[in-house]
Image 1 (cartoon, rainbow, N blue to C red):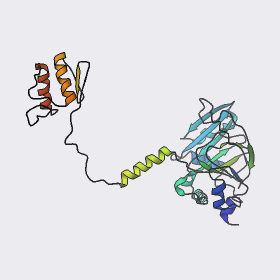
Image 2: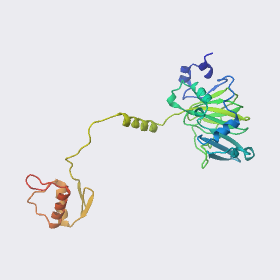
Image 3: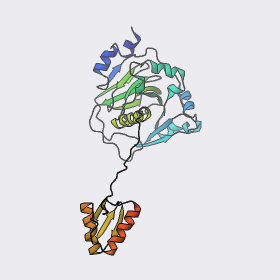
Image 4: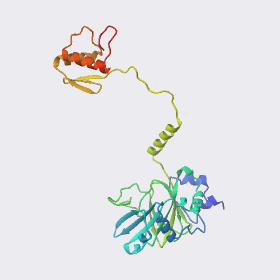
Length: 308
């Protein structure tokens, strides 16, 4: 059988994209026949302890969740089973493991620009990260061991308050399956799911980003900035002064000038008409202001020698 048909449970790429992609979950038994994984648990923990690796440790004890991010040391993983259930998750394994890159290439029927990364998780029996939902498409390929997956397409996405993880407060299980090595589950964005280790197990998550409109708009503007060239510069050689009057105060180009009643009336006339005749009789207070504004470039003399 064609390798893509096997990976998609006998579906063609077009059938998968038409009927399942971003629409509904799909369980595929033996999507990758004979697949046992690319790492063993100890190798994954060693990878998690490298300085340039993004990794997380999730623990669950007495209904309390805890999350710790890298950096890690080998001693951080000793004796964890005595402290409750736990899981370790390592991001970007495809960047550190050539076989991980080859695994990801099997999903090249989805545009590469959408690819997020290959995340590998390990959990002993009972371990998991709780029932949650993601904002991206994901293929969950089972490697070493077995994991029980519960899913829900519920609209209720209220989270447990103050939890370090985005765990759903309520979770209504609609379907569940136990995945063995080589089995795979596809989940569209926003589909609630909960993975519980049936025994020591490792899961390989191939994620594909689902960008928000905000991200698309921002990147489009960056694209335009890098590629569009428009000649010329903005110029406004003939700006006119902005002048407002209120409550005995005259505002001009951001400056405020409290004045007396007589000066206020004269300056308000200038603000309304945008011009004063040369024969206008002005009190000394307003005349001094007009002269200063003229020196500042706020006013200009008209051809008939009036101020405007």
